[in-house]
Length: 281
Image 1 (cartoon, rainbow, N blue to C red):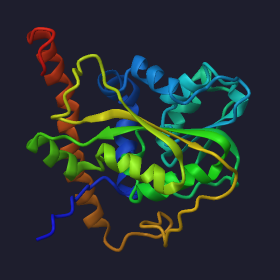
Image 2: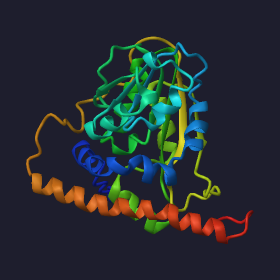
Image 3: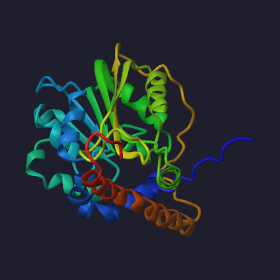
Image 4: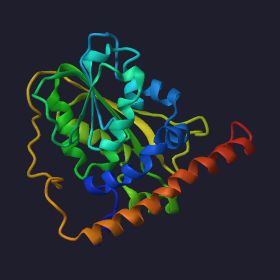
């Protein structure tokens, strides 16, 4: 008997667009401090190898520009492009003084509006979980990079605790570490590496998963398109949904499930203060 396919109610572009239209107002002040604080961001970006201010960098699914703020510490703003499908998130990015000079644009991570071999670095943080077809998005990362370019993907990890796994599967995509590596290698990347990351309350346990829990990198060794060939996209946002009521209920239930992962950091933070150091939580 085959396993049941997870619902992943917000792993669709339309629902994700609605989701961020509601949470964008508090994204930098509520989500990031608990799940993806600045120290995590900066540690993750070390793997992107931003060693020159002249590098051409694209931040895909960059939202409010939180990760982009880390990028422009090492790269000149005029060499940085921030792309996201949510105009609400991008509005927040446009208001940040440190991001003046970068190019900000709406776009689809699975169909990037750039020629092949355009960028030296590809960065994406907290975006893959909303992609209907993550393999296609990573294939696009390979395509838009030039030879010796580095892709740096920062994303969630799948929980092992049954309740957390249930809510994860109801909300969005929480890949396994093995899936990340497989997607990168199939796209054509070489020297693929996965590094576990986590906030300060994290002690190495994967029971509840993490909305931001790993950093995956790969190198494109030669110019050209990805060797991987895929069929049509799983979802085309330009086409209207047949039943908007059905979409609304997907969005509503998915958002309720997402609340669980806003409560987990509070629970884990309390445990971190109570449980003696050196013991797993």
